Image (cartoon, rainbow, N blue to C red):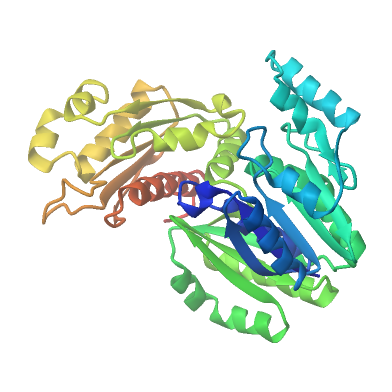
Amino acid sequence: MKVELISIGDELLIGQTINTNASWIGSELALRGAKVSHCAVIEDQKEAITNALDLALSRADVVILTGGLGPTKDDITKYTLTEYFNTELKINKDVLARVENYFAKRNRKMLDVNIQQAALPESALILNNELGTASGMLFEQDNQTIISLPGVPYEMKHILSTSGFDFLTAKYSVTTLFHRTINFQGIGETYIAEKISEIESSLLQNNVKLAYLPSPGTVRLRFTSNPEDKQIKLINSSIEKIVQLMPIHYFGEGSIRMSKVVGEILLQQKVTLGTVESCTGGEISREIVQISGSSEYFNGSLVTYSNDLKMNLADVNPTSITEFGAVSEEVVTQMAENGKKKLNVDYCVATSGVAGPSGGSEEKPVGLVWICVAGPSGVSVKKFNFGDDRARTIKITALTGLNMLRCMLLKINN
């Protein structure tokens, strides 16, 4: 099954919105044995849509369009497709009832433009959208399939996951591939590759694909093969070996977040957590509270960005700041230890650094970060340099602090 993707929207072309839809669809289709051969990003104009469709249908079995299905006048995809497939718009009673229910649940007035979202091409198979008002549409033509989806990522993912992918895999008889993904923090892809070179060679010899997927602070390893017993066993045994090689850096499988892994350990051990943050400005706390149920183990945070607050809220000794500076082992250790007492928690993570891009010096360059984790048995404190990109430094610092906490909780020597 050869697939082409068409992403519709001026906001994509001008860089206002990142095209995450295409990457997600491509990844999901690859796991189902389908190949995305081309991806186009076009403006929300009739001629652009029809030209892109003509070209895609000359080469592909399946074309998936995202975007341009909203209630406003500048969303014209539905009207263009209705004309393209020589059909007519008709109010779909089931969809209209669902749209009415959507607004009733939210106690919002339903406008005429919202009613028009139930006007759908008569020849299309309608793919229900339980999360929004714009339905997905599926057209079949000469053994080819065209699927049009809303551009809102969580709505698009829901529609494909609940109906679109099932339709495609059944019609085109593609084989779903076996895959596993494992996650690492605090180690780069080249260092991982060096450590597992022999294992990787064995995988490649047995037609198992290994992909390195880096992002700020983490690297994911994705293993993919045909669903054959021999290859599955090889992947599983290889993962066991890799995890044993890097226990400090391995933190979980699949799409799991570091904060969820840490949260589960805190729950299991029935202990509590707090943070005292300077350069991260609450980023660690934000990560923690992304997880439902985090109130069971997370007491709260002190964001002590200024020196005054470090002294007044976290009881940092003024002499330590004068002598060593706010970005120092001495200060961050006091932040963690005193925060543990102030917040009445078992563990406390503290950060202090120079996030940049300004504020650095020869002695304390931009990217310099000190992280300390204080627990019942003492502290773990480390110095890092995460580079001169502010957002990246903050993100990596938060992940690193959580991983240091994970290692302390599990008594892994890091």
